[in-house]
Image (cartoon, rainbow, N blue to C red; front, side, top):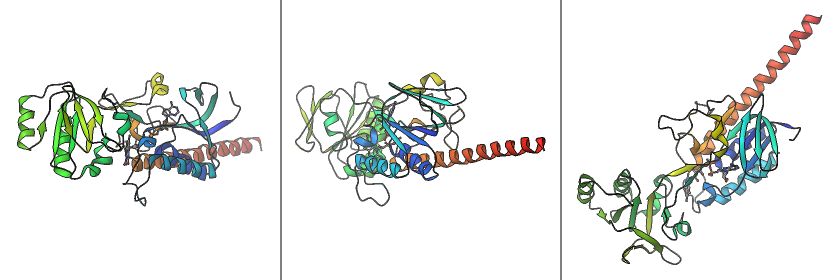
Length: 312
Ligand SMILES: Cc1cc2nc3c(=O)[nH]c(=O)nc-3n(C[C@H](O)[C@H](O)[C@H](O)COP(=O)(O)OP(=O)(O)OC[C@H]3O[C@@H](n4cnc5c(N)ncnc54)[C@H](O)[C@@H]3O)c2cc1C
């Protein structure tokens, strides 16, 4: 275990963790940022909705963010956090080290569940999309396939039609659509394909989706909904309070979890999964942590003054 006690350890160098690190670094706090690399933002190749950037890749946001955080003396280590516990201080464990801190920000994000359809990973972020808010716009007037493994995916097809394109094929992946849903889709002019897709095709751009029977659906983009999983292995043993659904972590308005001193920002909590939102939450958490560090230090000084006055 290192002797040093950090003011704050941040787990995850996506937009949430990096923005928090920059704020805390600029308060001259002692900050350690632990990141295993290759998160969700890193996979976003063409981000167009971040203020002041016409287009920027996720990897560039991360590289620039790390450089900016280092300028304010944030220590960054590339490593996987395996567990977190709290005695008087937080103790963060990686494979080869134990680190201690007064506060922790968990900003480790989520990851997309990809279906067992060949080449989905290859087109992730270019022709295979998983987020309407992020990439819906890129499907404007394109030939689109919407697919998912749950009935709510039809709402995505309906929304995509309203906002972006009328040329939509909907594929219910490994589940049957009730007749009522088929009727709604038919009324909206959305085609339904029930044969299972097996492969994405096209070089370099996506051109078609191949089905199990060998047929192909010509398409320029796929909007898929197979859910996400949380990168929260290190939080499991803490029995933190979850949201009403029991999936994501419950936090207060400053993004503090049910464990005092542990903040959770980004899509691990119930908010929207967006770069600027994760970054905003990181800033709110950092400002709150700094305020509490100030208060704790004042309290310590007051105690010293009080004990001094007793002596005199
Ligand atoms: C293809 C794609 C396109 C997208 N496009 C957009 C877009 O256009 N606009 C937009 O706003 N959003 C977009 N997003 C969503 C955006 O990337 C997320 O909202 C954002 O990543 C959330 O940031 P974050 O900091 O919470 O998490 P992340 O970016 O996922 O960062 C989390 C970091 O924590 C690390 N980590 C995880 N577990 C551990 C651990 N145990 N120990 C150490 N480190 C760990 C990960 O490796 C990662 O580096 C897109 C996402 C994808 C996948």
